[in-house]
Image 1: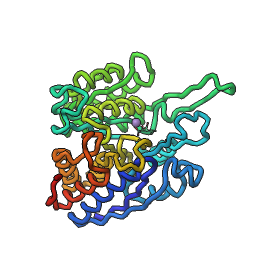
Image 2: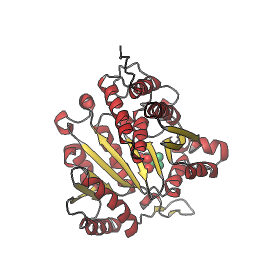
Image 3: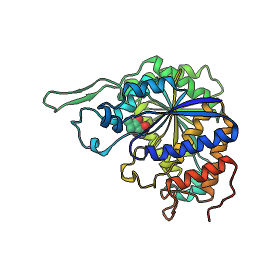
Image 4: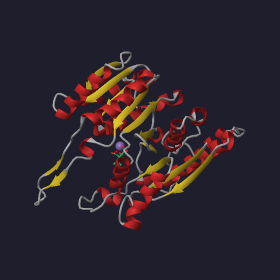
Length: 359
Ligand code: IPM
Ligand code: MN
């Protein structure tokens, strides 16, 4: 298969981890006879530095012309504590999600047996956890009207959702559940928010089209607690943009590290794949960032194009690397393996050339 992949490595550790994902994609191409090409473009703080805007038109054009987008991370500390910054790196990420209409962000939470002792939760609570979070990505409070009063004493962010926005991701979540354990949990705050009550109405109606899938509801505060108390109860979690952002960070550490968690953002036409972690400024350039989330994002990309054997080869290689304790220090504080050591190990495993060990 021929795939032209737009690569937006972004800021902080983004370029380092994305580099490893590309190594692994090239290993897949070599082993399975595919032709992957890459078009690199700037997004986030690096784009602001060069063009004064977080999503330059050139970058958008590169993405629109590509088959898929592989994204690293965006964000820079110089903006984080500066409420007056006129442009922010994150605006680029939000703008690309919107421009490509990537309304569904899918965040799988997988537990590796080897990492169970690394989880902040007790082993019996997490063995066997397998959750797929369906986070709405182009609506809600992230995109509602913002305002700040002239004297800067009152601010507001509007949260709004339309029936159509809810329907399109709900169908995806139910279809995903049909191929999994056939349960969708809608997470909301329907005891307080009008938008949440709309979500409940629309999702309940749609559930009628999927009689084989059970639907239940959870308030987001309770969901945050249940993820810690009994994460095994969840199959597909369906939720709005901000709740999904928060719950997916929480859920990712159940598996031992946010550095393992990948995501796929899809819409009607375009698709983008990125780790759920951020730009991790403190680790930038140190070679300590975990490349696995980016590598697994590449696996999701391949699966999106029907390359399931190839995606599975990457996932197996990642599992082997973890079992072999070939990990960065977020997983094993005593490890001496760098970002590129781990990427190269997975690359070799994917090439089918696992003739070297971790000794
Ligand atoms: C994520 C990130 C982004 C979000 C930020 C960087 C805007 O946290 O992808 O989860 O909140 O969506
Ligand atoms: Mn987030």
